[in-house]
Length: 66
Image (cartoon, rainbow, N blue to C red; front, side):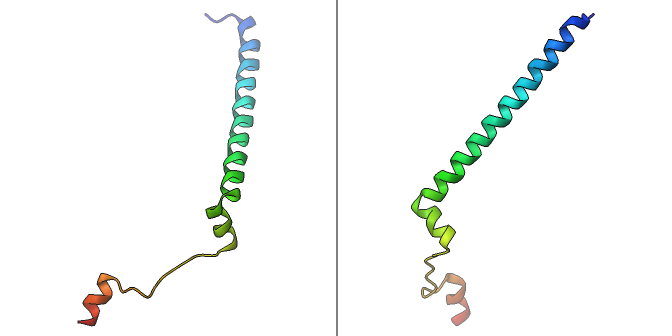
């Protein structure tokens, strides 16, 4: 049987783990977001400077033209 004196520290340790994991999650999310936004591809996506070449026909267009 579990002694009632162990429940208090167990809940305290569980709360500390949860808070620590949440802080670690936020740090990782912010670091990844900043890393992507600082990269060249991230800047292009953010500014929507996509390079899209539609001049080359696809195979489906080739079949449609025959």
